[in-house]
Image 1 (tube, rainbow, N blue to C red):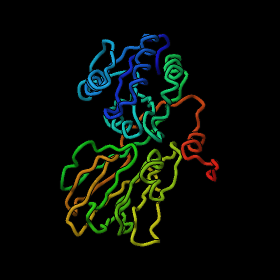
Image 2: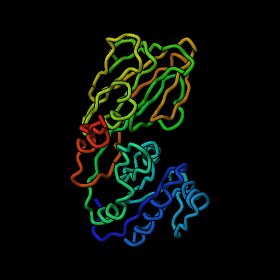
Image 3: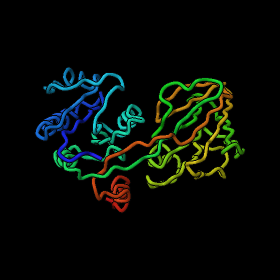
Image 4: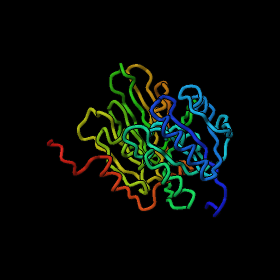
Length: 297
């Protein structure tokens, strides 16, 4: 809970490849200054703003690595940037405010056009924080590289040039099935509108305490998505003709040899996402998915 009249501190992160965000960042910095908000900026993003976008950034704290603290984290970019920022926040439990300068933007839900209103609402305490489930992936036999936490999904996938893979799947120690497919997506409710959706997975409300298993291009047509309680632990062993496969954790992928056992379960922390008070998941879904729009021209 933010104390009333407390001077707030925002930690600013952003996409390093979107030149068009210059106006939005300048506007955010100016409005934050008007509201007496302290700013800390991640070093690479600060250098991008100064050197590439030629923005006159006011004096501020520079964030090195993941060593930072703040009342809120501000993310300038799309959902991909949001996922990267969430992986850096991790168990700090700092609420994340996403300004969508990308495309679809389910996670980065605030519009750059409404920066002034959003910052004002945050300073007044007029906002909602939603908790989003995170998955934790571990391996037996080989250390899992990178950040093993996923806000959207953990996916095991074939290499681009490989034939389909065999994914031996167990739930809480009980054998389920062997998926013969291009891959398998283990997704959170948040991730239900991401990769999982594109291969026929169900859309899940963010508050749903579940994990979904969605096969990618399964060889058998009777392989369908499965919904599990988020207390379940999923264990996977993969075999392929190439002798290796990919593990993608929120899109951060690495190659592993066959027969490495991968365990996936709910992490012991959630990611906190700031939304506008009164904003519903269903209204966002209708708008983003353009349900009800007449496409006949």
